[in-house]
Length: 246
Image (cartoon, rainbow, N blue to C red):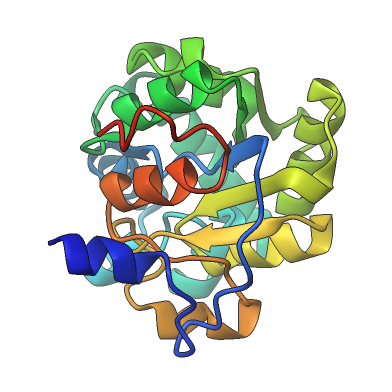
């Protein structure tokens, strides 16, 4: 076990991990990163299919809805026009006002967030959910208290992932140079690159199952669970006098 933990901190040529740096700001994606919201999202998709008379898609295709913008997913998997895809998204959003309660926080996430706050890190959520929905989800699962800010889509829904990252940094008044985004999809990684922050993919969510899938995005690390994230941040945010806190 100790050998594995030590290896997680080494430069892995297969993952192209960068040289270590100190972080002061940790940004998290929401769905598939902090919370497994798949039960509610799957029910919402089935609800949309029933309301709009769409042919049901396979469950493995539904899993790919988590991460990308819903409009894109409905166009890609249900072959809807952009106009109909926006209608589907609206129906899904209305269903998820209550359906957001169907889910669970990933193991170890609360302990990780507590640790980051104890170390005086800036912590935020950046998501392509509507900002009101993000607050609702995080509040329901008692994660909102750990966030310095929560950034999601506004009423116009024109923001990109990179936009949400930049807005979060601006709200907190922090530099992108000491910031890193944790997420479970390529959209997260691409958004991080565009916003100028580092990226840590997680493989316990839905969009990424193998580090090789995002090697071209030059992640600084890759974690398969919250414990590995804890170890990484313990070694990259400074204070280590009291030993590993997990």
